[in-house]
Image: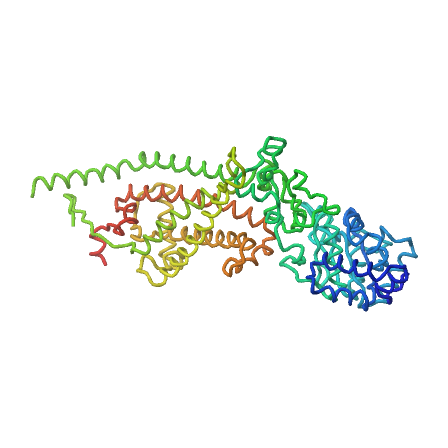
Length: 372
Length: 231
């Protein structure tokens, strides 16, 4: 088990890094966490003085794409942050230990570093049928989560599964997959996305290391620094939106020109994430840049908001082709037909009344002519 | 006072005060603009330009018109609520919520007249009839819902104080997507409301002959003379 009492600077020195390299690493980390230039000293101080926190990374109902994303973090280099800078004491995907050894490792970490370790959770927790749908070492996911969360210094929900249920939680949610903030009573930092951007993940961890507390969160428990802006507002195709120039069909002339994907169901206008700012894979691209609309993977229940290539969601119970507009049109036409029918029936059923009115009117005119 | 040979006399009643009429038509204008622009925002037209994108701004303009109309709509609505406490007896808030038994009786009566096209037995109120009143109350709830969801969507684009007041609605409804979906669905409430409302105004004007339609322009309606004698 790695030594959690050494600081990051001490570990780096032991590995032969120079002070210059250490400072470069610090400025990368500061940039990632969105810390302003004047805050650099704070980052250096934290990495120099604070012991490396122990990290427990739990995997429940998930596809490991969050881990895959995390180890592709561009700066600081994966090997640095994952395997050296943090002491990942327990993570099924990356740890060397297996079986009883692994379980002991987990147990040791949460007892030896009680109140100090960071708990990272990837995946949702099935709550149905006593949690039989996700058992690790003979224990239900909920059980493990509750035990690990008890003494954790901070809890981060990695990805949409842990933050809002994602695909497991999509209707009809057969295992009652539940996001972790609904299970544990501690505050949870939600880092949704399917997967979240690697640089965002490292940024959140860096923030925790430097400040020793959670970053400012939005209404859905997401760090504001990364989820504070809409993909739409930071999208490089936004000018086409304002100009009203839209892709009408995949591979049409407008798609080739790179117009706005709004009409192709792009979820950019309703999605909060850093995709169009940090981009993916070392800043190479992001979905919209690659010609595909945003599917809103960092938003609550995004699987139920389909189809992805429609601007509006389909309506449950009305078939996949029905959107609010189809239903609205049907109801509108029905109302118009209804009032037309009503008007016709009125003239038939109210003949007598109408003729009485007519009589009144006629006699009135006669009265004028005769008496005055 | 016009008297017919059958002896039916009518008197003029000043029903809709100027603020009520002003509210009504400004509201109608706003709703019409909001429906058209709102539908366009949801389903933008496919327009091709030979010019560069930076020379166009039509979609931005449509959205701007929608937002401006929304602000006018909202504050006009607030003024109407205020007038519900200080206006005349026909404008007051009691007309919109059926607290009294008489209102429920009238709702049934109007339902019979409107749906079954039965003969008018009793007397339909000269102001809002009780069914219309309760329908307007429900539509006020729809106004409120549309204002709340609209400003909630707008809050992420604005740093100003007022729209930020509505930011809490987004997490409450589970995210921007859900808010937009509901906001869009309620567009159709307004479309259907307009169809039914306009028809029923014409219908009541036609079968009652009391000037229902023109009353929202001039404020005057007509009531049978014998009603006043009974009182």
